[in-house]
Length: 454
Image (cartoon, rainbow, N blue to C red; front, side, top):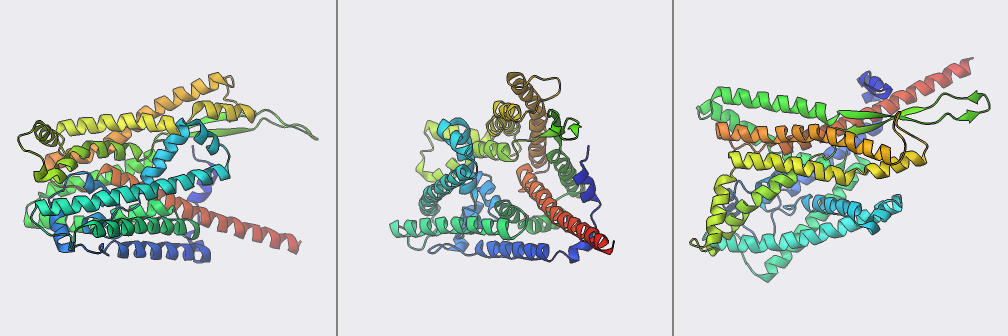
């Protein structure tokens, strides 16, 4: 059931957009910041040969690097200053969030309010810097060794100096992206970090679309495949848009309040529980774990003995865990379901929610406050998480099935679609909020003018 705010937002007059000077400034600032991000993605690291890098990267396609490269807008493929993107910060924030739910000291810090959240955010930044340094060093070492095994010279002057310079530049590039994301959040529109990730994904759409239609023109891709792919993308976008806004609203009733005029009617509100509470975290975790063996084998190269048992095991894993294989799709779906339940249990605590309701005098009709409310919340959350996990598995496995049936290397996976649609919906919602505030302001001004005329 739509709320009153949703009904008002649906009837917004877009003519007010011309009057929203502040909103237009925020939008232009956001566009300018994203242009800066795209420019940086083409600035290579000092001491590397971009032409050799593109040839090396083409030999490692299909691994976990493809996932990170998609999120960084191709920066990893070009080994730019922002090759690591914002993924170290995302990983650190997930780790800190899980630790705050499991560790008592961090859990108490989280309950301190704004000061506690500020400390946790500081820990997240420290973790992001540490992860950037570690990933940057291993990336530089792996680039040197992998290039030498292939008989190529991607690094002009390999050695300790190059590794130090690479780590400093990669850490600085990621920290600059975090600062840029904060500026977008405070001075622009939408969530800055999410918009940077979305911009990196959307930047690859034109090249993929041109390759797809060029394949249709030359006859290498059947027309029905292109039509089926476009229909799948449109259907998935509609499904994601619907499911990401779907909620299970629990009625919360508060006791009657005594006033000078007597007893007022009992207040009622709703506790919204999202169908997909875990967001895009389960697909990222599941795909990262499944693609890890392929990445290890690709970078190990000739250093691993081809007659050893470990090499045989890794080759077998690569064969059965390739994109589109039945084992890969089955394990991918199982991993999504597992991480969906796991992450939902981390981010939502039924006992804490029940205690907060009890302290504020709220209760669910027909359910006793305290332990019974906590059990009921856990029961409802488990049921809706089943639907959310099935929805995530469908969205992410369907493109993999499309790869298996057509052989088209689709970089546009379910995770990318989830991020793009979620960020777009969130940004549009914020734009509607600004227009709604402007509409309320106009109504207030008209009311004041009428009062003066009287």
